[in-house]
Image (cartoon, rainbow, N blue to C red):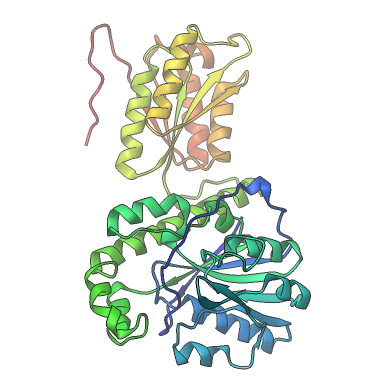
Length: 402
């Protein structure tokens, strides 16, 4: 799981968003990385990812590490050249393509040189055909990591496969160069290089991102303020999701005895199929209101190894999927304790259960007193418990209270 860090943007520019046909691969097709993998993530070109990468390379070299530049795209900007400073630059490979001579990273040269740390810009870049064994630079990076070389790289949020279509719809700009999400998620450390939309537009006006002849079109299209705000939010959300997974993994590994309310996580516990859809709907509305993850947990005791109606259970599973919830089944002779334990292990912040004396919940827990015991056990972990009264015959589903 990647370690997450946020750094503010520096005053330089980095890469452009050009594209070419896409290559695809699965995580299982690539050898597990041996080198340390660090990604500088940005909302758009110009936030300062390349500057941050080069500054880190300079810092590592000054500490005695063997650092080499595998590839840095300067786009003709002197300030980026200046940031390379005294870093060793591995010579590029010159390739002839459609009558032009183009430079690409020389993968074989990087592997032969085998520095401790390789700085490789623009992870989403599409290689010139014939320049090497792979279509995409991220595939080159996987080979370099597998060789035991640490890699520091850069990428923009729009290039992630799961986000690219949303960016296309939002900006009207085709995102041709894409990186599978698992590549970035494999990173040991992801750093967000952040910059406000106003600052980015100022850099654009000053010619620090694109050549001046491209500035007017960029400012009225991709670099509109609303687009930049949305791209920034996408980058922050991606980082927040990754950080959340890292926190949950850490707390589970260390068997945390308290719930950390860094974000809302809602769980609904089902002990029967009748009226269970009421609880799922109620929990789903609650989760939607606070934008929380939702878990649906079906409780099975030793004397009730299956629900009464298999079709009803399938319908509940389908309902859980429809509302975006994760379905779980747990079997335990003490459902109240099992529910409280599950909630703690999954860092649940709010628990929804049914509370009628007619419900199977009381049958499973031995009566209303054990519902109260669940409330006490969950409360000991700081988990709020919502006890929902079921409907009577012909009664409408209860409305949410403000």
